[in-house]
Picture 1 (spheres, helix red, strand yellow):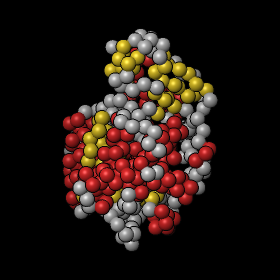
Picture 2 (cartoon, helix red, strand yellow):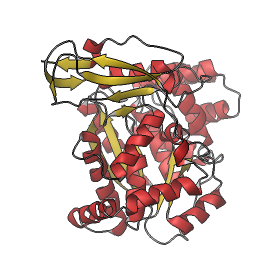
Picture 3 (cartoon, one colour):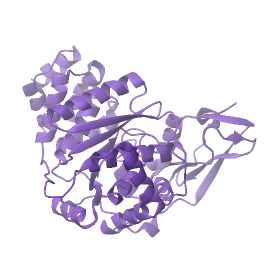
Length: 408
């Protein structure tokens, strides 16, 4: 039966709900080994899935665990998800902004996938920060301060957790139906009333072309319709890293800078404003212009940053104990000109090699390492300028600046 299902998908045929249910729940229960699950995932990655297969898989994921009900919490609960990108710390910025605007935020985030860092990994760089809140703790905290950012609860879509980890190390992260089922099952089971998806496209994202991004957008909107959820999607560029920092502790520090209005008018800041504005618009049911005014107000008056501090404190984190490695290496320009491009994928590879992510399931993350860009696209460069600072511990990596930076 197991081999029949693998071969059926290998030949590009459509799998029934019962076949998918048998195979995926078999893996969850330990009856299907990693190598056979990896084979099916690869066949799906190569041959795709029909809409009906994707709807079936999403339901199987949702039904594998609890479905949370936050209907007793006043207000429209809007959840946001990013498909992942190099330097993507948008959740750390926009969740406090949106909560400060009066929209309850219940954010259950994931870990790193491929070269992209996960929100939970970044938050764990804050000493003591808890990412394992129970359902009761989540509900209490939202009532108390209007915001929670945690990992998936133990019983929320357990199927996705194990498939997510296997995709990360089996070369199957870029499958559109697998991405859609993973994201939408978590958002629906997590009790979201409305959902905002940030679909990254470029060499530093799971999807490297606009056509695939549009397909994913359409598919997730369709899944939302099946479950009666409004879904908005924003397609954003990931050919260049988001902001200056790539690496867990470094990205938390950058998020704090944005919330304190210390960074303005770069690709990360602009995207954070756009995402937060859409979430506030959906949550308060107001137009984009009015929502943007509220977003700017809570940043300018400090309420958004204070909400971030409140979030960290309530989840037992010590914001004063974020550690960044003392070992630094500087990447310097070998010529003068204008910085025309920064290759997001190469920066992600470098950060991963330093230890900021996992190359295998058993790897441990070094939260203190990473890359901080000193220049952004469009800057004028002089020979000898520091283009980036590399923070390292065990590995002093030799980086090829010509692969990362394009100066003309």
